[in-house]
Image (cartoon, rainbow over all chains, first blue to last red; front, side, top):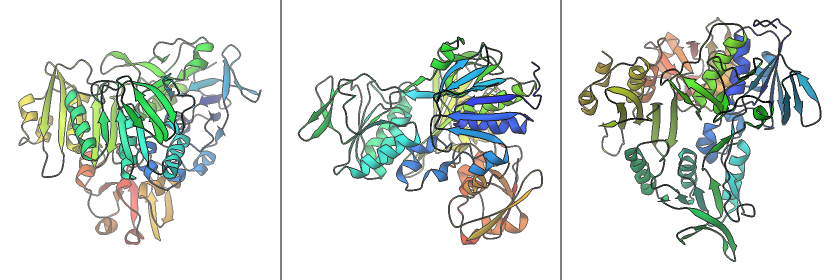
Length: 416
Length: 102
């Protein structure tokens, strides 16, 4: 086996979302001549996931508006799509993947872009609850949209105050829902952002008419004569026509695990995205990988990471020198607020807030420092702060906290 | 109906027609190379960067504030740069020519 594609090599990619699809096209761009097979259990043509909880949820436009690539592009690039198929096992010794229909297919290189699935917590009554959905796939979004449309009183309870839950809350509020978010922690977005950002989003949602309750541990979903209600450990009850669960994800690591690949908070990969098996790579949400910039092991749930690891893998599989070295970035849109985040704030010891709000328009940024080193920036309606933050962090440049805090200082002057 | 011409970095010309939607969606639907639209069209990723042809500039108009800031992440940006997810297809855009930046 050579590292270079021979023209006959077969690459199988399991998972046709952001990572898998970008990899297939990147492989062609890098000169992979052999077969490329993309397999996914989702029967829909591959689509963007972030809009599902945002614009897509409130629009009547079909999936064709959010497809990752035109259907014709797969043909043009000779990428074979196998949609609606499930891989049941990987035989790494014989380099085969087995499918649910009993067939198997040989690979020279296999890439796991298998992502993650929503956690459905073992709450009493969860199995018999009506109109209860996670928000991860196009089908989930369709279910939520139609259950919401059919319900008369449009009472929505969202369990989990993370980005998915809050984006879904904002969208369903826009559609005229009576929306309640229940968060177990003492603040929303507790796992991913600083208290001042949590406070900002709590106020934003409250002002837009979404009820946010923190410190709420849901213990039961109960049916009664008037419909169903969500019961919390403190005895409070919330009637719900539609329930959306957004309490986090679990990596789809079973195939890898059963194939004996190294697992550690996700599928372990090296800087070329290679797993512990020389012929198997992994990309995206399912991977546990080293981030060079922060010099630590990470598992990231983001489009950026999936796309960047796809590019790295395409280079690696076509025998080019490559190394994953990306700065994580994320975004979220809620109401008229555009949140852009760059970097990882874990371990910060100081926060600088820069407020550039004008009448009626929120515009500010939060800068996370460890000592004098800038770790991350959260920018609200402030792309300039996001861009300047990205450049400072990427180049590990120091910036004066006083200048950042002073909204009269031009941010660009920080780049020197 | 607007007819929009994309010219890719490797000099392929693709002419597309549409009534509505964003110019980025139109490019992706027609497989225009170099227009990725990784963020799905919300001005968050700068992967739908085009240079508007000089004679089309007046009709396309200037980038918005967020868009201008995002373009600064890209070394290829110039005064005719736009992120085409921010361009809404309309009759106004009929006949414009866009050069894909990457």
